[in-house]
Length: 129
Image (cartoon, rainbow, N blue to C red):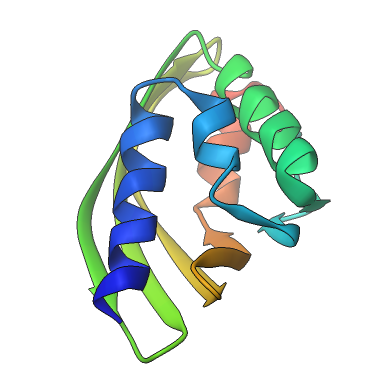
């Protein structure tokens, strides 16, 4: 479990530093990241390239964007939960909130990552009611 937590810590270090390619490399070749469909970057994105594209679209949707994990918790042998503090700004205002992530890992790589954000508030900030 500690190894899985380390994988997720390294993912967030890279993503927080803006190194999307390094962050996406933590995903398995068939790994997926899932965002709610109602967001501009929503849907299921597969493989490191798909994950990278989604991360770039997410970051590019905001004028300012910062995300920092507050807690990274090993849930069991295959799962890690992360509570992330996000501060972002777009044309509709600011989003200062918390997002929960759930990761499933396999053989030291991320097999699935799913975000659980406040989609209504994010859409409001993006000017997409």
